[in-house]
Amino acid sequence: LKSFFGLKRNMTSAVPNMAEMKMYANPSMDFTERLEGDVKNEIMEELREAKAAGASPEAKSTMSRISTEASVDDAAVAPVQYEAQNLEVPVVIVTSEIHPWSKSGGLAIVAAQYAYNFATRGHRTMAIAPMYDNYEGAFYQCTKSFELFGGVHEVRYFHHFQSYGEGKGCDYVFVDHPSFRRPGGLYHNLTDNQEYSDNLFRFALFSLAALEVPVAIELGGAPRYGGKVMFIANDWQTGLLPVYMVHRHRAFGNYNDARCMYVIHNLGYQGCYPLRLGLPGTMQYDNFAQLGLPFAALGDLIYQYSLHERTFEGDSGETLNLTKGAIQCCDRIITVSPTYADEIRTPEGG
Image 1: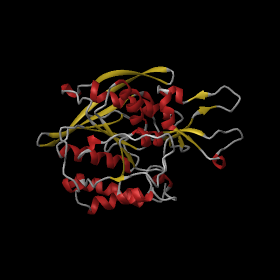
Image 2: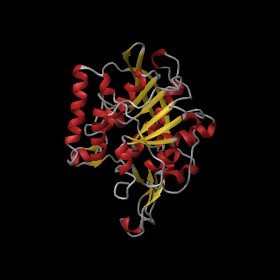
Image 3: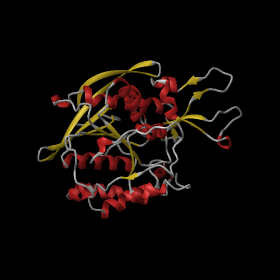
Image 4: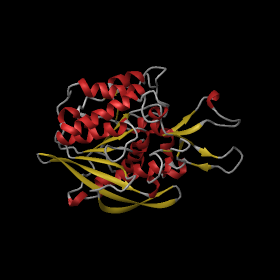
């Protein structure tokens, strides 16, 4: 976090050029060196399994082969590359999965590393994830309502504090809503491998709900984190978090002292959804209008496919790209490893 709070946001209305974009590889945060015994063995074995499964269709649905390999190799050999700075700034990790509560791939492992390392190095640390099941030791905190997709939706917040000794630990916060509790995978139906049709709603709701926690909830009776925090948003599932922070919160004077890092784990999945549902000339459903964002945010989210990529006559190719929105609105972009930062800046990889 050194000197990070002096950054200014840079926004354009054009689609980002990945080859020219200023990218930052994530400094190695090898929490495995700080673990011992069975816990370390379990996590390293899961990383190796993810690496070995890199060529399988199931593995490709969650993480790219190169990003998985880089995570394993870097964790095994790279030393810690930074000293903690700005310890007065709390860190808030927002992720769609986190080990050991939820996991479809390497994202859950990396998010767990963030939570452990920032906490043990002295930051007040929070990690926020959807609540896909009942979690032992997670206690109900409060209920809040959000207007989204033409309705009012209530979410419940649950809290678990994990101590790491010496007065350090992490506040794990779980956002509970019926849309998160599915018998299949976290993001898709396992029987036909199709993405859930309401994923745009699910993760828009999650992003809105996550932004409420630092400023509105006293976790376990402790003081609120407040508006000067570092958000770490991970992959397309949290791509709307920096968009909402800029266009809904900062527009009204909130979170002006906060910053948001966006971590790209797998650029192969960007969270692309049609701008409008329905054929031209018929009544169409406007996805953007359901997100509760001002019109100014449309330029940050919209992406238009080239003519050869469109699927039917009259297709405008207009989509909402959550990854593009995050890149446009976040304060800093990083990747899971230097290797992956290089890969996605090539024509083949990004």
